[in-house]
Image (cartoon, rainbow, N blue to C red; front, side):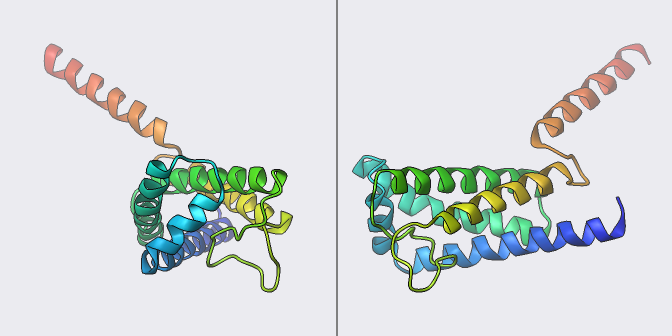
Length: 165
């Protein structure tokens, strides 16, 4: 891979990682407020709202740390793509239903604007695309499924050499 592309991918990986970790810190600082923000979307039953409000910040923190540290980049970037996709869909459906709510994003809210904006949704879509590109360009594997297939392929080739050699 050419050097300029590597630097762009590194910047994207570090940027998304820091963004997710920073966002997680804000959610963990006030879990009750975050649970209310999740509930404002009116998409989940209360039991799931509490589960999401407790689990999502830790998932974001873990993914962010992995991206910054360069650990399991393909899996971490794939998970961040899934998260940004879910965030974008949730925000879009809330907007289409006319809900005048804060996105609950903490980090990526635009000053002075109320409600969920097309700009906020677009940012999530852009972050999703960057996450997918990072996952696909990961030097170790390229995509999580290829890690599984690569592992299975290596095991089958080593078992053949033991049987016949």
